[in-house]
Amino acid sequence: VDVAAGAAYVSSRCVFVGNVPFSKATEEHLRQIFKPVGEIENVRMIRDKVTGLGKGFGFVQFAKEESVEAAVNLRKREVKPAIMLNNKVFELRISAAMKPTELSRSIRLRNFVKKGGAQGLKKRTKRWQERRHKRFEI
Image 1 (cartoon, helix red, strand yellow):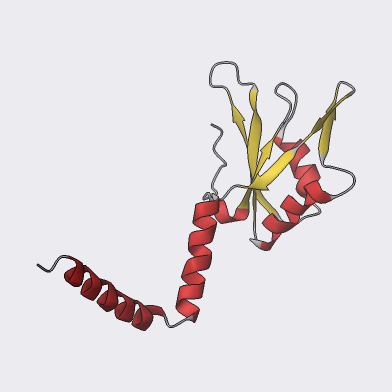
Image 2: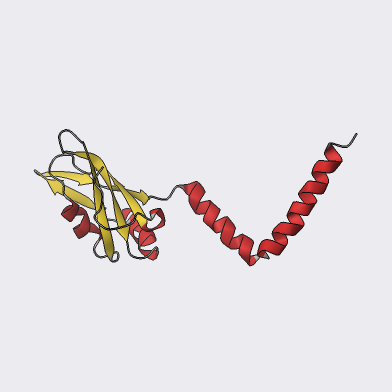
């Protein structure tokens, strides 16, 4: 795995890029494709340890989370993002790097705070404990 120099990996600001050509594609190719979307902090191409060739995928980390959504929307355009090497077009597959469960967890947490936060949690915890005691009473 290539490690981006001096940058901390933040999955909520990253996109996964698949179908990247193995041999000749570079980080610069991905930078050019994603430059119009937003400021790029780093690009990581995953490479084989022995041969040094790309494994066909990588990650692009943006400075802002809003850029991730814009990058994912690139695949909905009429002209899909692609890399052309040796007269062959490689159409890139782009998706958010954050796992859907992580994303839904952060959304649930945000909604939780909006609906009362810790006070609401205390009330719910008390209800859960009361239900548990009722279930196990003899």
